[in-house]
Length: 106
Image (cartoon, rainbow, N blue to C red):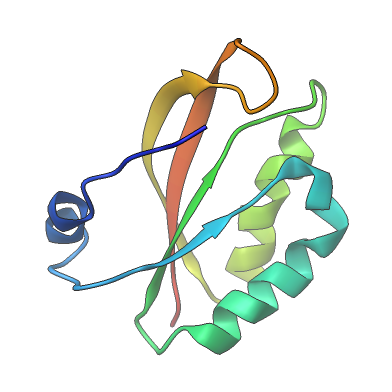
């Protein structure tokens, strides 16, 4: 699955930033959310933005997927929903919803 985003256009919408750190969060890593957030926190400068894209792979675990953003908020990140896309699932021809969020480091 390839998700193509016009980063220049998106950067304008998010404050004329020149670059982003991009993370892909998979629902199978619920137990690694804190580690991933620590990595993002240690990588970004203050005011830096990470783009987070994901889809729900396992029915019934949607709240666990979204708990990533609650954990991010507890670490001081500001999360913002940007857009929902429709795209092909990674492991099948099924079409799924793909979500794009941003996390801004304080």
